[in-house]
Structure formats: C-alpha cells, structure tokens
Length: 119
Image (cartoon, rainbow, N blue to C red; front, side, top):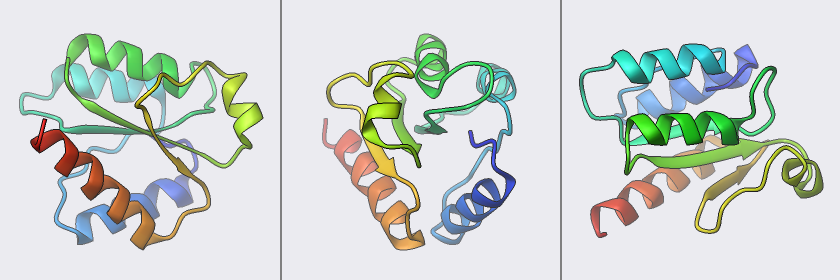
C-alpha cells in the first residue's frame, strides 16, 4: 500500500523482478478490500506509515484481523518523530526508511519472509 505512484510502481517492479507476486493498492480501503477478497495466502503487507485517511498502522491492525500471522513491513520517508505521532509501531514490527534502494527493499523483504518460515 503506497499512495505515491512513483514509489508504488518502482516497489512493484523491484518485487516482481525478485519473483514475488505483488498485489498493489493506492489507498488503504483498496488494500483492505483486496486482502479481504483474495483467496490465496498473503505473506506480507508492505505499507507506508503516513497516508491520507487512515495510517499504515491502522491498516495493518485491520488486515491482521483478517489474516492473523501476516508479516508487516512499514516504510516511511518521515523522521522517526513524525512516524511515532501517527501511531506507535509495536515492538518487533519491521520498518524501512525511505528513500530505499531496490537492493535494500529486496533484502528486507527476504529477511522478514525467511524469519517467518523459521518461526
């Protein structure tokens, strides 16, 4: 879930290049609806922290209710101080600071998914 079209398109392209199936949403409600209606397992929710409407944290809470066990990776270009004011990130939550490189995104996703498979 990313509201910036350039970041959204680049992120999708990087992840697809690394062999991931990517469901893309521009708005939190679209991400929630997509998650609700998707019949297969979703392994990870990648969402911006600060978005119009609801925060990434609120979206993650709603998606976790639908899909317990889904991993969540938050990303943000704001400082840590700004992120905290948009809702606390729980301990153990994964975070990637923007701007990020394609390599750092792919590495972080792989780490999270590998961690999940060893749990």
